[in-house]
Amino acid sequence: MAGQETGYVDSQMEAVQFAMENGVDIQPYLQPEYRSACLKEIVIGLMKGLDVSIYANHNYTWRKMREIRLGLEQHLDVSRYLDPLYSYWQMREIRLGLKDGLDVSDYDSFMYTAKEMRNRRLKLKKRKKLFEVSKDWTVLSSEDYDLCISPDGLKAYLTWHKTNAVESVNALEGILKGNGIVYGIDYKALEYIAREYREITDKTKSDSSILVATGLAPKDGTNGFYEWKVHATKSRNPKLKEDGSIDFEKMKWFQFVKKGDTLAIYHFAEMAVDGIDIFGKKIPAKIGKEKEMLKGRGFELKSDLRTYVASSDGHVIFRENELLVEDMLILPQYDYTQGTLHYEGDVYIGGTIEGPVTIEVDGDLVVEGFVKNAQIRCGGNLILKRGINNATGLMALHVGGCVISHFFEYVTVYAGGNIHFGASLNSNLSSYGAIVSYGEKSGIIGGNSYAEKGFCLTNIGNNAGIITTLNLGSNGDIHALRMVAEKKEEELRNVIKQLTIVQNQMHVQLLNEKQNAEEMFSRVRQTLEEKETELMSVRQDINNIKKRENRANRSRIVVDQYVYENVRIHYLNESKVVIPAKQLVIKIHDEKIVVEKINHMFGQTA
Image (cartoon, rainbow, N blue to C red; front, side):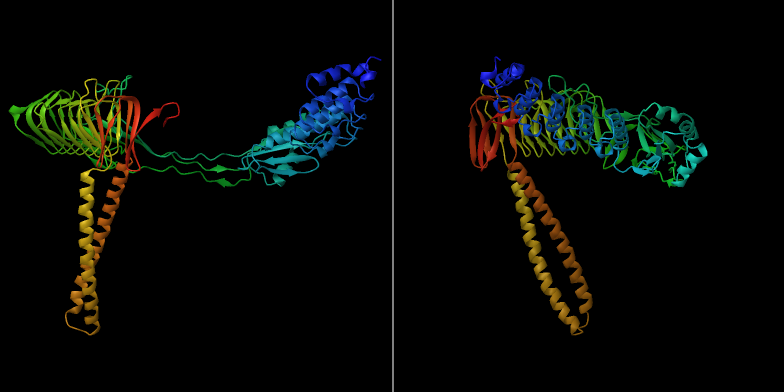
């Protein structure tokens, strides 16, 4: 024969070629007992790193080898079906059962044909699928049936195993009640089992699990809620256009209302409905919670106890979890002929401000038009939709909250919050928050600026090389605050020390029953407690100031587009001129100014 000299017969040639093509050494298995199909199973096993010695046995046909190989690939316990007396169909049924995680001991006996094994496997698989939804299902089993109860006690499934005539409806009902099921019994389902079930089993179909009892699920109550007829937002941030610039047209800082306008409608909590499980036990439902009535001023509650309406004209704001409808001053414009403006509240100016003029507002100030030569003191937030130019350079903006402006030109700004703007030219900006520019052509050109929480800018400087200075780290204001607080702390510690000495002396006098000592002792003790409380408050202030210092020293400058010539960065006593470049991060590291490139791909600095 053609292959005898090489150790194989012609019928094995195809398998040998298959092994050679895949770089597998088949020589040890070239026995005349193995047909080509058997050798192929061995080659495939060797290719996949399997222990082929488990099935490289002439007692196995190639189909039996395949079942064992597939079991090894699937990391199954193939020892359950290694006996050569199994047909390959029986092996397959056991392997599929192991693959599905079934207890194959229920059908791996030689007494079952492959078809019977299949029916039992499908039955086990269906039962497993039904109850693997939750491991907490309760299964009550007998020789005739399985009664499966859901974890919440709201459903019961009956699986009948008998292949002969089934019990009567009354008998089936007795089985349910004997297991404690008394509520929600489905008598139609019991009739189906009693009358129709035999037809199913006679056709050797797998057992069916039928829903025979259903409880009443509890209906939880819903919480009460307010349906707002006004914008119920507590934070107001700049709205942006597609190009990233601030969209002042869509910025509605104030929401005006008229007397009688509906502000909110309250929807009461819906009542809960308790449920009943199949054992007849009550299932308590969660009770919906009511919300507190609205607090604040400038509105009233109507007789339906649901509808809140404005009691006067004004604008709606939220402050410290209170709804307020407050009066505000609305002016068409303002100029130097009207003198200094003082107002204890919010002010809306629909046009321009033409100075020189001074405006002092306790609340927010919104100006729709252009501002020129104005000295502004604002306790709240300041919004300048058309920007500001203080050509004289002598007037400043002092703002307790944030500042949002189209642009700054020759302006000095002091803000307790963030400063948001489109462009800043030759202006000095100082913020206890962050300084952020918006828009592709935005940025800071000229001036000397400081932001305690850092800068996020599109550009710094311009092609003309105007000197632009930015400051990082904690500034003198924070340092001065800490010095004052630490001095106060030292003074209080000395006072407490002296009071403690006096208190001890008074205590001795009390022991010696000196007259009037008790009253004096009480006064000293009270004063001492007050000073100790004050000291705790001062120490908390010092901790907060230190946190601000640490935060400021971790601040950075992020430049999304370009840094031009003559941009200078100051930190403590160090000054650094930044080499013009694109997309930079400027920060403090080891008390030194560090300039790094932005790596947008990874969102990190390079």
